Image (tube, rainbow, N blue to C red; front, side):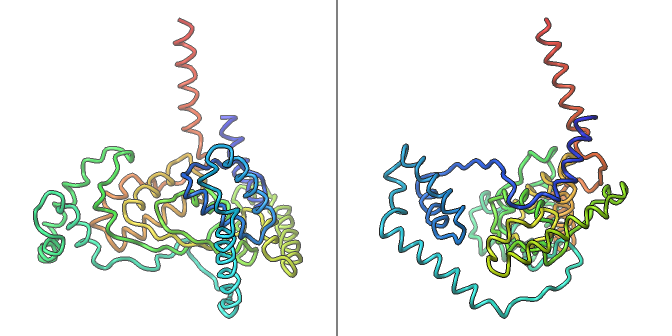
Length: 337
């Protein structure tokens, strides 16, 4: 219980931490991936990112020097100049595309495939048929609702836990979600890589949420004062150093980004990120994504999001801590013998 309360307090107060708060990051990749990463980092307008690139380069030179030598050559410099010039051009070009518009829901479904059922069902049948994909789609279009449902149920209904992954057929339909949510939630969800995502600038322009626990403890006055100080600091730094100003924005302020992902990844993300031990903010995002997919594609989403946990929890990590205690007790009993 004490560990659960401590974790809850950290989750709440985390919203006050600035985005420059140090964190641990592990990277795994091949030579080509690291070469591109280094070129992007060397092209960054932030001196800290360039310094980190040099440190990464130094370590990689010890183990795979031939794979990461290009970023230090004239060819690498050309790539870095290309990246930087494109970024600079787009910032100048996009100056007229700025406005602060309210967004009621954290998650907005921007687009999706109208013919998702035909695409997915055709892909389900494809490996077990000798017809072309075009022929299968033609046949599926003529199927009744009950016929389509039977095929989808045969393909998905045997899932007993979320770890039973959906088949690849569900990778054939896509969704684009525009998300406006606290920066802390973005930092948790950005780790999902089987999708396309892009983030806008980190600012204080979209405001912040005050955790209900802060209000209940009557600490919202102090909380708001701290956040307003961050706004003043951000605005002052932004006048001359807009990129560096992002460092002072607390994790509780909202940031906008988009996800474009297929239904198989929707299943993975929403079922994983809605689990009870997750943070309230990213659980809310996962739940809203699941709801919006169910609204447009109920037949596909019925089993694809069946393990999304739509409940709310006051102490999200309590059950996880209980299970941990049980494991510890079992180990103690085992090794006492």
